[in-house]
Length: 116
Image (tube, rainbow, N blue to C red; front, side, top):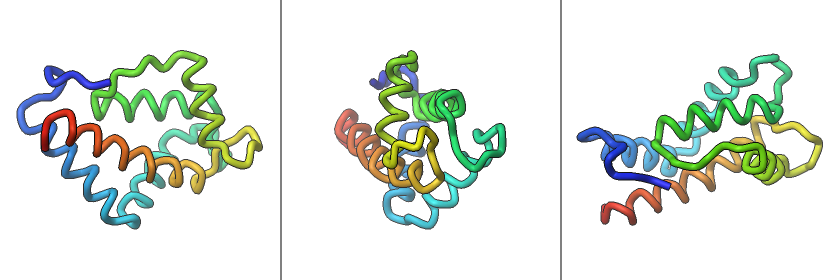
């Protein structure tokens, strides 16, 4: 999922610090999710569809150097996991709820991988 060579000097520490702040401050995570949501809700429907989720995940995975292929099966499974009420759209609240767990897991993996 990660490769040490993908991180420039100091970048890993900065990413861990940023993810830690999101885990410790739900208001900060809420604000960041709101910004992402506004950016990737390109049709301004107030929800993310599968295409918008894919673009969001592409940007997020690139930012944190996550090596996971965003093929149709992965995006579909992730969409279904986030869309808790199964209305075929992702609300800001659903994305935030998922992100809270995902960020904590990501932080844990980064710390464990590099013995932080």
